[in-house]
Image (tube, rainbow, N blue to C red):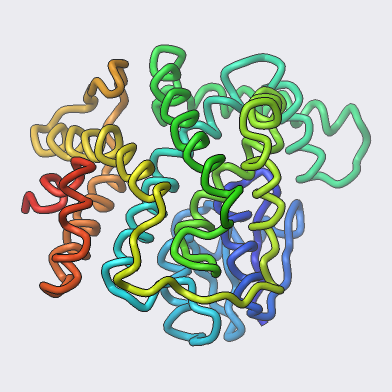
Length: 331
């Protein structure tokens, strides 16, 4: 049996738990103090950490998803059509690397969210020990997280773009979920789980939850559905079926924001610079360079280049229309 060592306040933990539930892969969910020992078993001490049945430990949610695909054939979350599989991966990558900034921003920019969420996260981690001890730990954790905001680009100067992007993707999701829950058929892909992981935290944090409840109520409710889809079977769309409108809407966000973000980061690293700036949706954004996100761009390009001609013929017009193609093709 697998063991997910994670946390309720971790978007990537929630992403992996929801995926394991859907895939009906036997697992245990361990969070709080009981999960801390797993961090010493991996090179990068970040959650979730998955303990495999053979006793080995692994983390980084996207490689974990693909390793599970290789080990377990049933209830795959990768569309069988390579073209749609690439689009699903692109959306999942966008969620992991860009939409996560919404989670950080809504959680740690305002006092009301900082106080409530640091106390809840401390409560989750300690599971007892008394209120004074819990709140003392909460203040330490709050100070650490607020101090990291500039590193991950979640500053007040950057937040207008982050919020505009978040509202655009939620507006598309709101229009979609009243027709059907999934993106590529009646069963979920890794794209749904990637987006769910980040939005699961917006559905809990005070300011973000109020925003979702008021303006995107069906997207808010959708989160509870994606959290446990173990009873869903469903089918994939035909490879030649039109994409749902949400795919175009979300790829427009990828083309307008995420691709310029990845390109500017990679260019800054190549030039030996420590930060970069972009303007998207008419709004400024500045951040320090991240080498991991340069690897994300390389991986996306490699996956796109590996597609055969038939797959490229199906999706390249859409990628061009949404201003994603040039960045993916620039080797």
